[in-house]
Length: 117
Length: 117
Image 1: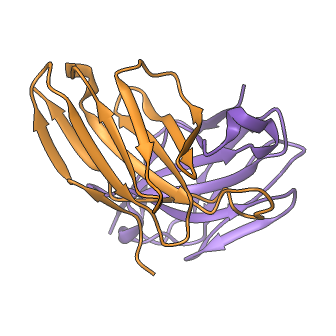
Image 2: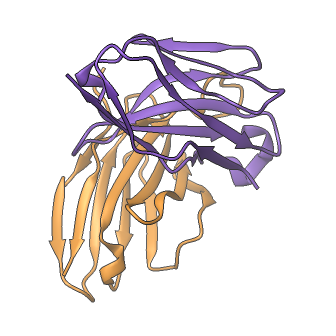
């Protein structure tokens, strides 16, 4: 079974631009979570989507948004980029759902490295 | 809220040495516990997990036991190899917390392990 894939792997943007990152979960997984990883703040939870609905959100400004499609693929968007948005953005998928023992085990993609100049 | 604390790093060992990376947690409910490993330039790989007290997760020679009484989940390996050099993250998922827990892993700060030949 193919793992979680993320595109693109690397991005370079300038301040003020916007960016869209894509994530394809493991087949059959309906939950997709997004994380930001930086040397200073570590791994921080952005948001989670399940069946096209955002169920949970971390403490990030509204410039960070996401969505999920009917095939469970997910995108996240960052508008009006700031230098501090430079980070590795990780997507993870899981079987999360009611009555799913072990469904909270998340499997991660390789990440998208975003550099904001 | 939930939190995970890992031992301060980095950890430097010689090949075949014994490894322990300490991890303690605070959770409002009854969490699942995980260890993830991250190699340079890659995403996180699930190393092992445990979902209830006294469960022992194991994989590739690594082990960790879920200790509810001490709220700990220490990672151990009897004989490390150069190829084990990576960053190790302890994490928890607290599904019993309801909506605010959906799809969210809480991570420790990570421990850098370097193994010399």
